[in-house]
Every structure is written in structure tokens, then in C-alpha cells.
Amino acid sequence: MLRERQIMRIHYITGLAALFVVAVHILMRLIMPFHMSLQYSNVIANYHNLPYVVLLESILVLLAIHGFNGLRIILLELRQNRTWENGVTISTIAAMIAIIAFGTRTIIIANGLGVV
Amino acid sequence: MRTSNRRGLFKTAEEDRNNREGLKGWLNPARYGWERVSYWLQRLTGLFLLIYFIGHIYETSSLTGGAGAWNAMLQFTETPWGHLFLILVIGTSTYHSTNGIRLIFTEAGRGLGRPGRPDYPYDALSLNYRQKSGIWIALILAAVAMFYGGNVLFGGD
Amino acid sequence: MSGIIKKISMLRTGSKHERSEKSLRGRSSIVLRVYRANKAVGDSAHYDTFDVPIQRWTTVLDALLYAKSYKDTSIGIRYSCRMASCGSCGMKINGIPRLACYTNVSEMESGVISCEPLTNFPLIRDLVTDFHQFFSHHKSVRPYIINQNADLRDRKELSEFIQSPRDVDEYLQSSYCIKCGLCYSACPTVATDTKFPGPQALAQAYRYSADTRDTGSREDMKAIDDKHGIWRCHFAGSCSSVCPKGVDPALGIQLLRGHMMSFSKHNKKIAELKHHSHGNQIT
Ligand code: HEM
Ligand code: SF4
Ligand code: FES
Image (cartoon, rainbow over all chains, first blue to last red; front, side, top):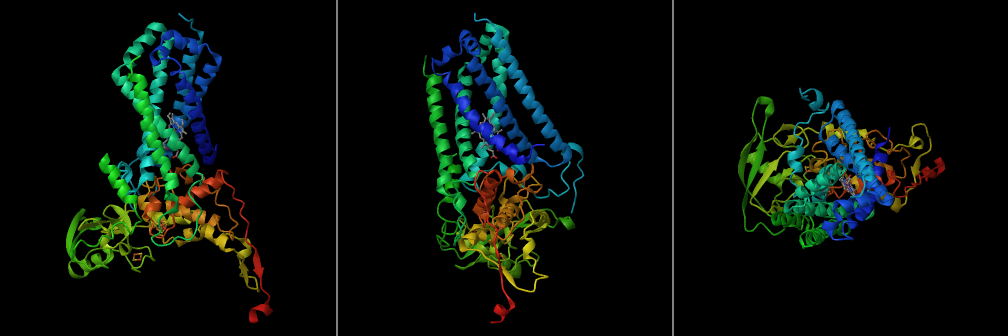
């Protein structure tokens, strides 16, 4: 089991790393007029660009870990008994995995789609 | 000591919760100074961003349905209300990440000063203006980012 | 929103006691609003109000004792030293945890002063609360010096530790804690988390681990490196803003966290023992 201090280190590191990748992700919306950047063809083109795909996947993983660990912290502080604590740990990890799986599915499928 | 008779998921700990302030006290951040406000906002913005993050993953999953589904989703999000929501996301994420950096330093004991020999009236060293100004900077940056985002989103094409 | 901002900045401008030494504004009496409840006899919570004459030097404790002496002898209060040393008279005064004996009525903005029992402590009666959990959290961090060499029972010679003033400064202010519980009452994590040791206990964990006489490591303790341990502090600073003794629990907690994360260096030198021979002692 991870010690709580290691989890906290992970929380800080994922937060900091997310700051950088999210900044790049948002800049992508600004290198061309915002509305154009959201056109289907432009978005699908993004998903064919391997560095960008890596960027998206890392945002997904980093924020899922950081965000759901944050939620776990908040919920643990609310109530203290074995059932609740185990429930919180299991469900936040499950949610973390689910969101990563779902997001990855989008990335893989969009990557396989042809540009119209 | 009295013990609670609630069972299962909502059972309280062995210790008595009697007279704990609970969430009710948590909701009012204005009693103890800026650090308490910073903590309160960090939590609310963190939760808000988590909800946005989940929504955003759902929103982009419409890509897998082809151009039609994607455009239908855009029709829903690319509206004045959708843009207002995005501006809120810009503000909260700017605040959360800037104050997050401040917290990474302070929670590691940086910028709080060295312990010493306090004198009357014993004002706390850790609540100094050096680290407190980080909260103000985060708030100002959030306002600036929201203003800029508003210009991009509402400022014509 | 602007109201909130005004309230916050009012709280933190100027030091705690300069804040409103603005005199009594010509007042010669105040109204005390005292929380009353004796649940043991089925008495439900209510407030009693008392008109109390005041002087420039009247503290909230003085005012309460006046009410107890001349108006209603059944008011339940706990106090002893009347000089911010014993830590018994903590209560919520106008919504904020303070020591009644250390709060002058002139510091309060209004002519009505409300006294309520400390939140986060189980209520016993009126203004008196139960410190049981609080003390057991305190004990859980082993708040004493751990050092095998310090056991003098089977040593004939007297020995003492050598500490420089700088070594002392590392922990001195944390050792001023009087266990009044104000910080514990103000803490937003303690408000919902019964297993969180709270600012007082964690500040004592810092106090002993920063002491060069101490060889025991508290950093691996269950109470500290746990999911309800030191990491549940989010630096909301409320503890330090109410502490009447300048302990600044938030400072100690963050310093200890830094050491535990190895973000800051913590190569504490253990103090040496100075040996005295019998000859020296006699002269
Ligand atoms: C991008 C830069 C970010 C940084 C530097 C950052 C940093 C932090 C820090 C330092 C904390 C405080 C932990 C504590 O007080 O103990 C925190 C809490 C949290 N963050 Fe982030 N964060 C970032 C982005 C995000 C995002 C995008 C989300 C949403 C998915 C998020 C969700 C949360 C949540 C839910 C919490 C828990 C709040 C709490 O414990 O009070 N964070 N973050
Ligand atoms: S740290 Fe300060 S507020 Fe907390 S119990 Fe000790 S003296 Fe009281
Ligand atoms: S009576 Fe001793 S601290 Fe107030």
C-alpha cells in the first residue's frame, strides 16, 4: 500500500504537471480563431497528430489521478468508519480508472477516423 | 460518552461527534482571515473543475459519433450560456492552479518564516503577507484570465 | 461579496489586540448573551442575557463571573488562572474561539457579547466542554522527549543536554501551548474528521521532533502519516489566527510536513550529554 505521504507527493506532482500540459492544450485553442479550432475536421486532425495525442492522454491520466484523489480526500474528511473509508477508496479508484478508460476510448476511435 | 446508534455506511466513529461544527461551519469562510478563504476556494474550485473535467470527457466523446454528433454537441455548448460557463472554468482553473502552487510551497514549510520567540500580541508568523499575497495574486490572475477569455469567446470571430 | 471581503480584511488588519482598543465608546455596561444547556436534565439549549457593568479592564471572564456572582449562580464556566496560563476558559466569544480571561470587552465591536461553548468539543453544560478526545489526540503523538540516554535513574552522575539558543528557538514557541483547544475548535478539518489529530497535537509532534534532545521519530507514526494524519491539514490558518500563545500551530505543521516530504532538509543533530563528575557537583 502506498503511504499517505507518497499519495500527497503524487497529488502535488500531478497538479504541477497538469498545469503544463493543460496550458499547451488551451494554447491549441488560441493559435487559430477559437471557433475554427473546434471545427470537426480541425479537431480530428489534432487526433492524428501523435504528440498531441500523447498530450491529451497525459492530461487525462494526470487530472484523473489528481482530481479523484482530491475527491477522496474531501470524502474521507466527512465521515470516519471502516465501511465509508473503504467505500470511498474503492469508488474513487474505480472512477479514476473508468474516466481514463472512457477518455482513451475517444482518443483511439478519433485517431482511427478519417478526416472528412 | 454517548455513542451514535447509526449503522453501516453512516455509522460514526467510536469517538463522539457531538458538537462538531460539521459542514455548516465550513460553509462560512469569512471568520478567520484570508488563508481560510483560500482553502475554501481551493476546495470549491477543485470540485467544480472535477465536474467540468468529467463533463468535458463526455462532451469530447461525441467525436466518436462522427461530424454530425460532434456538431450537435457544439450546438449545445457553443452558446452564450456555454461560454459563460467556460469563462467560469477559466477563472476557477486559474485560481486553483496559481493558489495550488502557493500551497505546494507553504505546505512544504516554505515562505512561512523560521520559528522564533513570539512577543505580545503573538501574531502568527505563518500568516505573513509574503504567502498571503499569493492568494491575492491568484484572485487577480483569475480575474484577468476571465476577462481575456471573455474577449476571445465573445469578442466576435 | 464586498461585505465578506470587508469582514475578512477587518479581521486581519492590525494585530489581534490593537484591532479595536477603540475604547468602550462611552459604554458603562454591556449585554452578555450566554449559551445555556444542561442536556443531562433534559434542558434544551437557549440563551440568557445579562446586563453587566464594565470598566476599562473588564475581561469577558470578569463579566461572566460578575453575572455568576450577582445574577445567576448556575452559569457553568470553567476557569482557573485568569491570566491565559491554564487554558481552561476557552469559549466562542462573538463566534470566534478565544480565552475569556484574555479578551477584554473593549476589544469587541458591539455592546452585546455572546458566549458559546467551543465547537468540536462535546458539550457538558453551558460553556463547559469535554476535552477527552482532544487530550487523547494529544497523547497519540507521544508528546514527550524520547531518548534512551536521558534516563537518569541508574546514573549516579547528573547529566544535562547541551543545546544552543538556536536549537531552542526551533521548538520554543511550540512549547508555549497551554492546551486550551482554541485551535482545535477553529480547524475546518477537525469540524468533520474525528480521527484527525488536530492542530494542537500535530504542533506538538513538530515540537518534539524539532527538539535536539529527542531521538524518537514521530514521522512514521500512525497518527501522523495516515489517511487521517498530518496530510489532512490544508493550511487554512484558522488555528494560528486564534492561538492566544503565539504557538502558530500551522507553522509547525507545515514545517513537519516539509521534513516528511523531504522537501526541506532536516538533519537534526542529536544533543550531546554533558557529564558531571561528583567532584564538580560539590563545588
Ligand atoms: C493545473 C494545475 C493544478 C495544480 C497546481 C493543483 C494543485 C492542487 C493543490 C496544491 C491542492 C491542494 C491540496 C491540499 O490542500 O492539501 C489541490 C486540490 C485539489 N485539486 Fe488541484 N491542482 C491543479 C488542477 C486541478 C484540476 C484541473 C482539477 C480537476 C480535475 C483539480 C482538482 C482538485 C481537487 C478535487 C482537489 C481537492 C481539494 C481539497 O483537497 O481541498 N485540480 N490541487
Ligand atoms: S496551539 Fe495555541 S490554540 Fe492550540 S491548544 Fe495550544 S495554546 Fe491553545
Ligand atoms: S482562566 Fe486560565 S486561561 Fe483563562
